[in-house]
Length: 177
Length: 315
Image 1 (tube, rainbow over the protein chains, first blue to last red):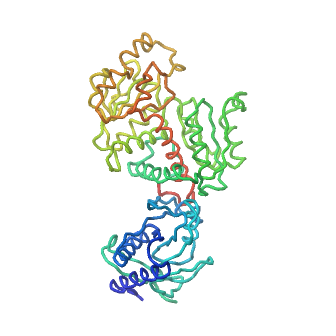
Image 2: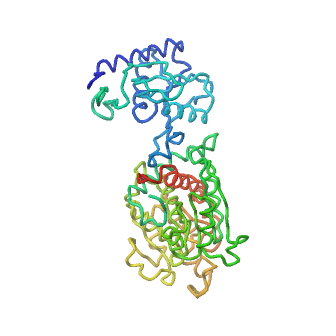
Image 3: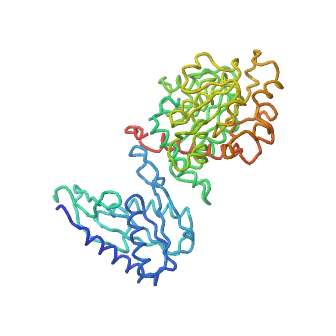
C-alpha cells in the first residue's frame, strides 16, 4: 500500500483533531494533553502548538510513560523507561486527552489508563490517535481519529515524524492478504 | 543480563541505562502512589548472611514498590546459624520458587558461586560479598554524583572524586573505582598504605597518602567506614591519629571546593572518619544517598526481572 498519509494530510489531520478537541471541551481552559512516548509525545506537542495558536492561550501538555504498566512485560526483553512529565496543574479534575500515534490492540491505552490512575483522578479521559488500524483486543475506542486505515494483521503501520525521522508520513508495509 | 554480580559485568551503556531507569523510577518514590504493578507475582528473597540496615531495607522497599513479594532471610534466626551450607539454603529457596535472590555474604565470591551453580534458576544480585564488590552501592553513588554534578550529562566525564579511608576491606571502594572510572570520572584513593590492598597499582585510579594535598581539587569526597569488625591487625596506631590524618572535619570542609559534595555509604563512625558537622552539613548528601538507593534498586530489579528471561538481553 505504501504511503497512506503524506505530510500535508498529516498536518491537516492534526489541525482537525485540535479543533475537535476544543469544540468538545468548550475551549482549552480545563484540558491537559498527555502524549505517550515516543511519537505520541511529539504529536501532543504539535497539537498543543495548534491549540495555542487557535485559542491564543497556552495549554497544559506533558508526556505519560506506560512501560511499567504494560501487560506484555514478561513476554519481551526489558524496555528502557521514557520520561513522564506531568504539567503544572496535574490531572486531578482535568479533562485529560491521551495522544498516541497508532491505535491497534488497545493494550497501550489500557496501560495508560492505569498509569494515569496512579497520578490522580481526571474529570474525563479522552483519546486522540493519528492512525486507527483496527484489530482491537480490548473494549477501547478513540474519540479523535486522524485517519482510519483498515489493515491486515500481517501489515505494519509506520509513522514517521520530522522531529525523529526527518519527514512527516504514514506508511503501510506488507501484503494486505 | 540475568545476574548483577560485579561492576565488571556492566558496560558503560548498561550502567547509564540503569541510572536513567532509576531517574524515572525516582518519580514514583516522590509521587502520591508509591506502588507499581510491574513485578506482581514475582518472589524476591533477601538472603543476608551478614548484618545490614540500609541495603536490606532498601532492596525490600524497592521490591515492594514494584509489587514483588519479599521474603527476608538473615543468618541469625535461620538454619545458616545451625551450619547449613549455601548450597542447601539455595536449593530450599529454589524449591520455594524464588525468582531472584539478593545475597550479602561474608565470603568474597559467594554471589558468583550462587549464580554459577545449578542450585537455583533465579537471578542473583550481589548485595556485598566479603571484601570484593557491592555493585548496587556504587550505582547509587554514581547516581547521586550525576544528579548533583554532571550538569545534565549522562556520564561523569571530567569529575574528580576522592575515596578516602579503609580501601583494603571495602567492597564499596572497589565497585566505585570500577564504576566511576568507567563513567569517565577521575578517581583518587586516599588512605594510609596499610589500608590499601595488594595490586592496587592495577586499579584504574590515582593513589594518594595525603588527604590535605588532594581535598581542594575534588568535586566529591566519599568517606569510607573504618570497619572495626575487620580490624584484627594494627593498620594504624590509634583511632585519634587516623582521624587527624584521614578524617573529614570542619577545617577540611573549608578546603573543599564550594560546590563539592560529601558522601558516605554508611554506617558512619561519627568522630572517627567523619565529624558530626561534616556529616550533617549542607554539602552532605548522605541521607539522599539512602533515598537514591531505593530508586537504583528498583531499576536493577526492573531490568533483571520485568522482562522475559528467555530473550532477556536488553540490558
